[in-house]
Image: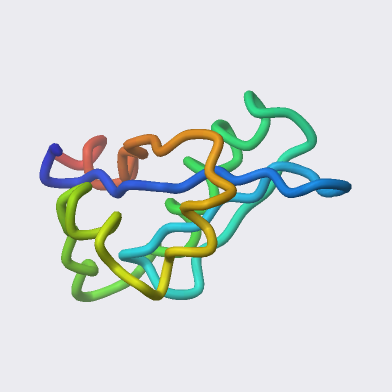
Length: 93
């Protein structure tokens, strides 16, 4: 995983849109009517959520996230797990 990217879990439950959860970024969520929309909105949500943050949240490995009991229910409904770059930092480098 690159230094300025976070793993996001995209899930779909019956009767809902696709929802996006960032296990390493508390409070950062997104959604989309389609899987593509969910992916695109995830990048925007992460950038807005972390804008102005003094200290970036620590990223964990995929294994650590999969082993985390607090995200077990989300993992059960996961459609995919993606790496989302924190674009604001990459642009500044």
